[in-house]
Image 1 (tube, rainbow, N blue to C red):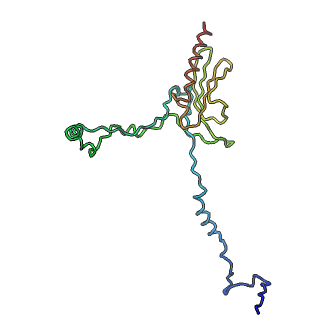
Image 2 (image 1 turned 120 degrees about the vertical axis):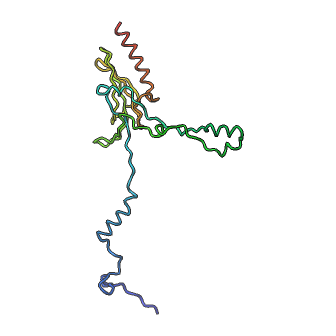
Image 3 (image 1 turned 90 degrees about the vertical axis):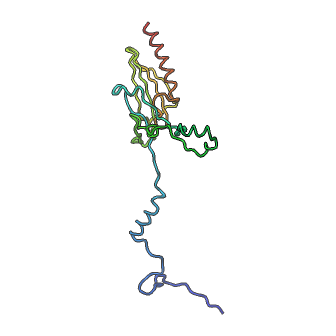
Length: 205
């Protein structure tokens, strides 16, 4: 006959020799720190800030014509005169000859454009975007360009506002250096500037 095993009335009585408990080792402070360090790389997120041009033409006239971020083309290669002569006499040597790069190191190492700065989140934690504003004073036909980081986006990417004695043309975007000059996003600014010029001429007549 099988005997039923009665459960222990006091679980704490199950203790090994030497005072050690049969449970798993306790988490000491050193173990907790070590465990946290092992898990830390899984929770680290690489964050990159948006880069925008930040300047005011009233403070620096160079703000009128800011160079956009240039895309570096891959280096083109042309055969040297000696290789070209070899290719003419022996066409099969074309596949084995090495080409001489024509792009200079200056093209491969573009300097950081002027006024290009990082835009971090504001005090409210809002994501930044790039903005370009063109002010035109109607009375003296004065123009001013402001490039900055914005935090309150408009429903429209580009719009025009008619305020007291001056016109505002504002465009916004969300890529690095997109508020520079000669961008497709800001192509409408040239059109609006031409319209403003026509209006100023009509008002001056």
